[in-house]
Length: 108
Image (cartoon, rainbow, N blue to C red; front, side):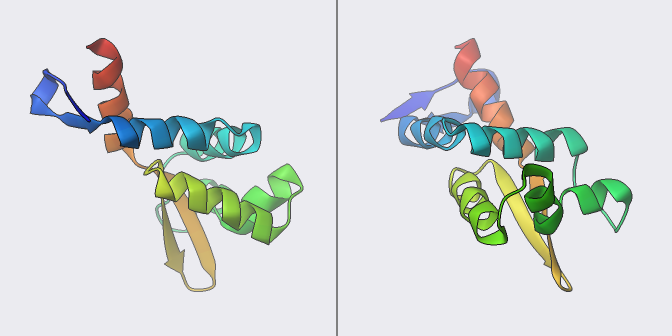
């Protein structure tokens, strides 16, 4: 099922919205997403950038890298974040387009 939204003729797929809610339904994933969202986009190797690295996220939540990787995979699958490898580090940032689609969906 596709839900049509009037703003900018954006189409929001009900299955995609369901996947977003499923991904954010886990308290740890929600906290990880909130951390990535509040730090901002990863650009260069600034302090904010390092806060978005997978290893820093693992330290922040006292989780193993494999557990964080699993949660990040679910957030990526839902389209909520993007991950980019730079050298030996992987940096995460939010995908603002998804937030715009959700906002359009809720304003319907």
